[in-house]
Length: 212
View (cartoon, rainbow, N blue to C red):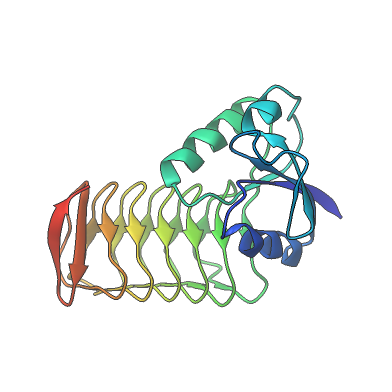
């Protein structure tokens, strides 16, 4: 059984601990963003130190799952780990349905239970699919995109880097063709048109509320 360490101690951490375990890894311990909790335990796992402690150690050949929700931080930490020789393996829950005609990055993608990725779709490095997300056929998902539970992405949609697709939102095929970089789609939204970069949109139909 391979060993893995979890980075980030927060409310979502146990979700990704269980995902790692379901994929056959043994979670050794956790790292927090600072040293305020070093020596404590969280969900029965020891907090081994801070991110600074980690990066001052030898990470070469070690596996890490990044549990933080801020995708910019996740991207930065992941980049540092990989540059120092660490690994962020892609974790796909055994109940997920992944088409053999899809392409999923082998670095840092986290696919939770009962999610689906349909044929001819591409999932970039560091993306997170919470439970029951559906990515229809022909979609292009760029790096570090977050999908909340039960988000539905219609066919032939392109989603740019670090976009946030809220839970139970629906992106309509052939209408929501493009979601911009860093754009946030609010929970429960019905997206019927392309959305630009760096905005917050929500509603049914979704409309731009403000810049992000």
